[in-house]
Amino acid sequence: MSRAKLEFLEASKSFWNPDKTQFWQDAGVDLVIDRREGYCLYDLDGSRLIDVHLNGGTYNLGHRNPELIEVLNAGARRFDMGNHHFPALARTALAEALAACTPDGLQYTIYGAGGAEAVELAIKSARNATGKRKIVSIIKAYHGHSGLSVKTGDERFSRTFLSEDTLGEFIQVPFNDLDAMEDALKGRDAAAVIMETIPATYGFPMPHEGYLPGVRKLCDRYDALYIADEVQTGLMRTGEMWGVTKYGVTPDIMVIGKGITGGMYPISCCVVSEHAGQWLKQDGFAHMSTAGGAELGCIVALKVLEITQRPEVRSMVRHISDYIRSGLDEIRTLYPDFFVGIRQNGVVMGLEFNHPEGARPVMRRLYENGVWAIFSALDPRVLQFKPGILMTQSLSEDLLRRVETAIGLARGDVLGSTPKSGRARA
View (spheres, rainbow, N blue to C red):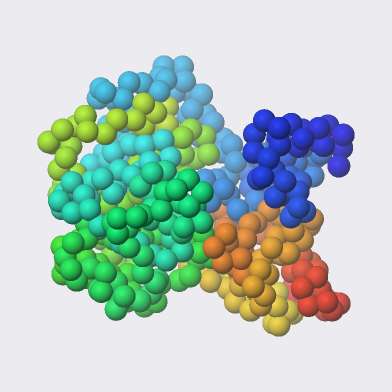
């Protein structure tokens, strides 16, 4: 490690986040991101990493996508953030575009600057529309770190700031358990159920057949709204524009973040039905966000929607997801005692390892071999593996070669034996 990098890491501990900085050093990841281009990151020392973390899908279209840079630069010649109190050309244009491409019945877009704020908006809208306070979420859920959103997730993220639910207003049930969901809803006291379509921080467990439609039916039966958190599964990551519609579900509220920014300008969206958004007619000043719906962010997001909905992008996602899955299956045959499963829907992938924290050594070995992916915080057996939706064939081939090497080395680290020789692919 260079002297300049060492000095920077020490400054990071002094002035930014000492625990997080030290955590990554202890994990063998001394990454300081410098240049970034396409689906590659370059460390301060110059080494290249293929990015299959994508900051949770923020970089679906790659880092510094040229079309997004162009539209942002052009927009900045006329616009800035704008004033959140007044109608705005870009803000209304994006809301109209979202009404056109989101599931039937979603009408209004309420803006935030990040996903957690959009989740807050979803919860507040559901409470207003139903006159109820109770919110049901999934055990090991993650919906952000702000005041209401953090209460919907794992207590790991709430207890540090004494934000645990003490009033019984936030209830959690196991994923894929319709009986538990019905038990939580049958008192008719729940405003909403909020779920990631495929829970990311929990390692992307896939919904069982009929589960999400079953939850939708329970919401209808017991007068609760369905909030779909599409922050990580939206924008074509499953091979369809929105993951929840691929499962045959029409939500009352949809939360969109990360990828809608293009990684270029912070923005998030809470898209609501007429019923869920009735407060917008009662008191449009009830929620305010200075940076929510910033006009430059809306301009970028409009371009993100246009790129993402191109027919060739849908085809590309399906091709890349099939190609990478085939390569991962071959790698799994080399190390079946360690690499034990692949959870997948499109380019939403979770790689399962036969060790309680098996994804941690895999992450480290991937980093050493030029790939950046991250373990699932709430299930570290699983590596979050998220290729971009515009990945090329050649980069995918390069990625798989590096993954094969890294998993073999991690297997040796965990099982204490020499990795198998030979290649899974020609």
